[in-house]
Length: 215
Length: 349
Image 1 (tube, each protein chain N blue to C red):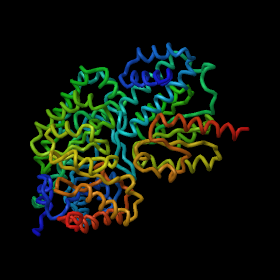
Image 2 (cartoon, rainbow over the protein chains, first blue to last red):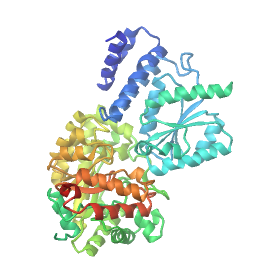
Image 3 (cartoon, helix red, strand yellow):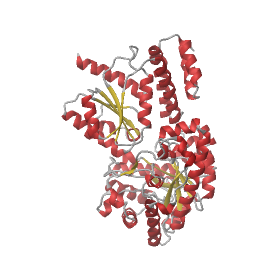
């Protein structure tokens, strides 16, 4: 086992056992900058934990706490607008027409742990969400849903954004999209992920695409 | 072969024997509104509407239960929470009524008689009992004391409470148990034949087994022992295999299982200790063709049906509004065609 593999394993164990002290020690031992540590350790380990959840090997509560520990350490090490944060298009996260916020909170935690600067729109109705996307020039919008009726409303969201000519990459997630793997395409989203951590790779890819469109 | 009525069919299967055919629960809580030609909010405004809707659905689809359940946030409304209605889905809970964890210290259970919503459910159960002649199981539902806090506090705050505040958690469980026991027993008295103990947080999808064993498992044992009738536990699409042996020790008779686990594997793990209810994917069901529905039912019966101890149903306990009638009819036709005992797979050479 390489040193990096050993540290990945140690970090996973620390996160799953809710051990903040061990997480901080692993960061210090790595000798990396906060952003490097986020990319080389937090992101792959959170992804691994997400994949284990998908296979039924860990629980949602462990993903939630792991994300919170990573986010909290990174918030402490990096100022919110510091130069170390990634340079990305404007990214926002929202819950569409629902009061269940856990999915959004997971997303915020893992993306911030991955060094991304994101705007949390909180709970939004369709109308208010479109207005905020337009006024804040959002290019990547991640929408979390719990109810099937809310998930189906994404289709109308896509239509409104397109009608306004807004070039927004739409990423959807939540239970309805996990239980019906074709639903994200049906509602006109650009991507989906069964786990919050899976959203990191999607945001990386979409950021590159948006960057390409801007050239 | 002797023909059973729905009550006999379900009870025989729950005792792990084969009745005349696989029992079938169509848990279509919203489709009654379509039958009555009204919107969802109006439908739930009167017990007579829901009872009529349930009876019409059973006459149409020939399934083996009636349900007095309206919608989950009806309970949270009794605790002072908000219910938000939708035109195309079940009512949802709004902002959690407990704004801060320390409000738990002063929390008292609501009185059933003060809640118009809960009274409507009790009236629905009385009407269903009057109209079923004791030949059809009537289901009542209670959100478990362990899972209700998701709506009382919000999911993230509840997970924080579970991990960080055992003192407040214990106090909340005591208060919630008092309510759940009262609410379940009132439903049994009104006409429910059994109570569905809705406990999604118990699932290993949501919390680790070790945490469940020291929290929700103990709560379930204590609560189910005080409910004066049979219970079935439902994990609302969450996985169950990791805690099957604990669930079997809670005193529950049956388990609602997820489409994300293999039904044959679940049935084997339950092994005569628990009956299995499920596990058609309700979300996918929306876009099934009648032919696909027929195949899914055949697969489920082949995996779960042998030896009884199995009731065919969806995996969540609530079929989405968007599922077309023709799919529901195809499911029903398939159960009546392929669900007769002895099953074809048992008689094949």
